[in-house]
Amino acid sequence: MTDLDSFITGLPKAELHLHIEGSLEPELMFELAKRNGIDIPYASVEDVRAAYAFSNLQDFLDIYYAGANVLRTRQDFHDLAAAYFDRIAADGVVHAEIMFDPQTHTDRGIPFADVIEGLLSGMAEAEAKHGITSKLILSFLRHLSEEAAFDTLAMAEPWLDQIEAVGLDSSEVGHPPVKFAQVFEAAHAKGLKITAHAGEEGPPEYVYQALDLLHVDRIDHGNRSLEDPDLVARLAAMGMTLTVCPLSNLKLCVVDDLADHPVDRMLALGLKATVNSDDPAYFGGYIGDNFRAVAKARGLDREAIVTLARNSFTGSFLPPKAIAEHLEKLDAYVEAQG
Ligand code: ADE
Ligand code: ZN
Image 1 (tube, rainbow, N blue to C red):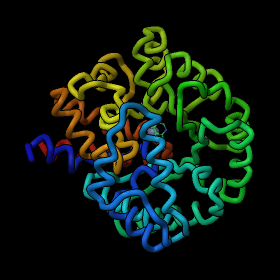
Image 2: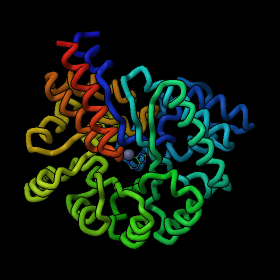
Image 3: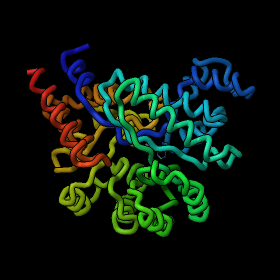
């Protein structure tokens, strides 16, 4: 490990863009398949990893939804979340805002209660064991209908006080934010915060729609905003957080090479970028790996890395007092590192 690598590892940070189903490692996939008596189309863990070669978002989503089929019981969802938090404890993560895709499970007959209660118990365990705080983001699948999203929001009603925000994920192109304007309005009226994947594969127009029609508090990815200078100026002026995912962008061919990744260009343009893992089990790394890989590929200095970590706190859904406390600890770490 270089000095910069160990600086990154110890740097306090928050993860704001993580699909918990995307943290399902092949080893746990096999364990759950066995526990639940499910056949999976892979002979070994190596076989699973070999299948993780994607040329676009849809390629990945097909395998990701198939992988989620081993998740059946409350205990499975608990174990999935616990494994994620155990892993990120070693990456300096002190807070995480994690997305889950209820429709991926309820459409297979898994009760919403089992999904969310399992995740919540994994989150509570992580706070007790590692001191990592966390929040839940309920993501609607955009390849399904707005009516189905409304049904999901209704299912979530008994747990609304334990859900921080709603999000929008899955196949982007052909499923613009406008398709979900009403369900996001309903979610906002219930006091939920709003995020949406926009500008990962979709055009800048989808980012405008996320702003103007969904009234997002954060944009997930946002890469293609860079094609539109007016949009960049607007995002910068409003201090909109972009939850950027370097290794995901590489694996899904949003960028051809990490050496071309735009994260430092975003910072130079005044955009509030953060670094996140998206689906770490599928894209070859957790948040620390994402920081280290993009820092190396782009030659980021400490200042840029500290800005990215600061942005993860100021862009979080934590209350101002908690944000201020995290920033104090971050500053103390940076000072102690010299
Ligand atoms: N679901 C999980 N990961 C995703 C991504 N990167 N984009 C859209 N939907 C997703
Ligand atoms: Zn994502």
